[in-house]
Image: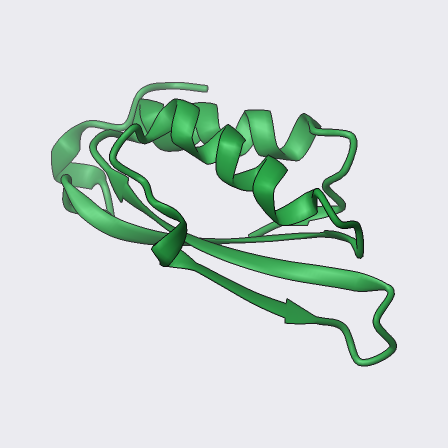
Length: 91
């Protein structure tokens, strides 16, 4: 993937950036996602987490708001979340 010059980016850095992560309903899902996010945004805290179960309770949606400092940081975070075995979808 070619680097995007700052003048072509749709995101102004630094900024707060919400990411929605969906996976199966599991006791450790939300905390595991917080642990992954904290690796990429050390300033992240659990107060920036919103959780919503699916209508039938089989899945959990976790929205985290990270402090995005660069495109590279967001790309690395998306790659790690997307490849995590508990994660079904990252938006």
